[in-house]
Length: 236
Image (tube, rainbow, N blue to C red; front, side, top):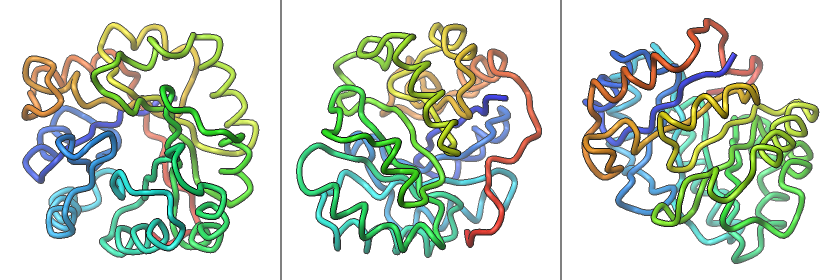
């Protein structure tokens, strides 16, 4: 089954998303870039508001691919009580050394590696995610003004990505300026999650507040499921 991930920026938005039936609450500040991070107090407030009603993920921000900076940000974010920590594999910098250093972190932190459809890394991100013991991978878009995921990659490419990630034992998600009209094309690929931000907001603007009707419209398009996205055996 495919889970509905809602990206939110504060506790009130988290409550709106939960009320609409979101399966995963994703913490992100859309005004700070593709993977803009919330400040620690806001993350803590969101985790407290969710109170275990759904898994919570949080991004570390659009950080340079410098190993110690990435590792420290992962540790700091994980310490705030989220279930998953998301980090982008930006093409600039030394992603290889970052991943090597994160192999130790992946033993105690559920890592989700974000691959950008419009800024593809120069290595096999799925194989690297499996090598370091990450929990999953997610396709997204880096530039939110340059089209949605399906404007950059074909359905066949997306299907191959999903199948390859699942074959390596990884959770796999799809996101990137997705709208309600994209859902019927993506569900047959059977990703573990489909993530939304702009489609859940007033007038479809990702910087606007979440809109209850928009959230419920997406929920109606997604299958209801009871499976847990959380892998057992790891610390939150």
